[in-house]
Length: 77
Image (cartoon, rainbow, N blue to C red; front, side):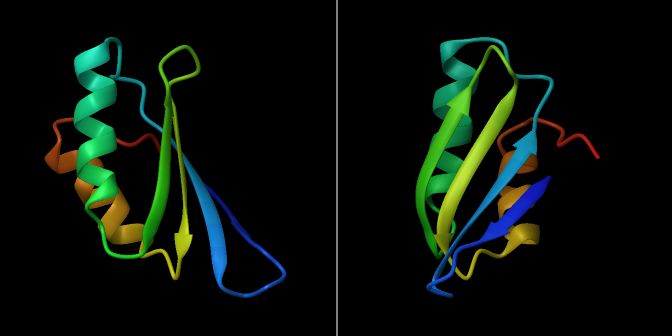
C-alpha cells in the first residue's frame, strides 16, 4: 500500500496491491465495497496491474483494507 497526502490537507490517495482480482466481477465487488467506506471519493481498479487506487478525505486505511478483504480478496503486504 502506498499513500499520498495532497497539499490541501483534505484529500489523500492510497494504492493497494490485490493479486487475486482477475475479472469484471472482481472489479465490481472491490469498487462497491471500497466505495462504501466513509471518506472515499473515488476508487479505480486496474485488473492488469492488480492495483486498487483510492482517493478521499481522511482515508481510514484499515477500513479500506477490511472492505477489500470483506469482498473476498487479500491485500498484499
